[in-house]
Image 1 (cartoon, rainbow, N blue to C red):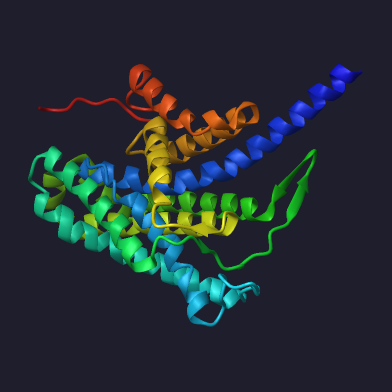
Image 2 (cartoon, rainbow, N blue to C red):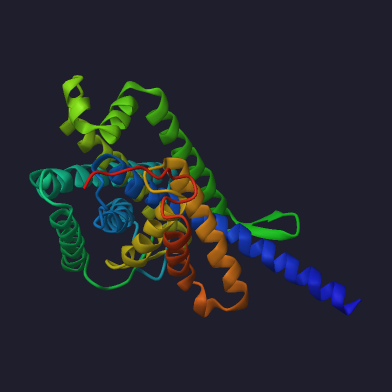
Length: 314
């Protein structure tokens, strides 16, 4: 009987961790989509993308502060929903503009340069944004506004935080909507054409520069949503909060198949669940799961789960 009770408790804890992992993996998926979209079009790993995620969290923090809600004080009044909508719109718009600005100033001049030059530039932009964030926002940890009261929602034998459910629903809607946009619209067809052959797409009348700029804008907007959602669930903001998230989202993109939007979503969910399950045994090793997964994928199936291996001229 004692064995049955212990096994039941372990199963409940495992289900709880899986549920938490789905929420964590949903944020990974939102950020990973930005990596995979840019890589699909430019064959470039935009390492600055993780810092756009950080900016999204900060951009959704300041509207409430500007309107008189002081989350750093002793009292943290709940912020009205209209301010939440304003913060969401401001964060998405500001990050989309930031993504387009990064592409225009940092990557477009290197469009025909070597991949190594573009890679070094991406790392440089990331370092610049981190240091700029410390100068503008300061290195002090900021507490996120109380947009939503955190409560537990019972789901059978487990209880899930309402913020986790919000993360999963919003991420599913955004990733699903983006996939339909890319597959069913003329602009999405232009993105796929640029991904397949940029020169031919230009000859067929596609505005390549505008398409690439829009790709950066959409990817950055997704990262902004991810930053806002994770800040609602874990209300601590720092200028370096995107560093580890960016690495894990990159692993998620590679795991699912970089260049594939469904692959990025699948990779994010798998990575989030794996981290949480490992955390049931030892939380020390939870962060190492991403890097072990990256090594295994590169050794076993470099194209990822949903990725397709292709020939490349060198």
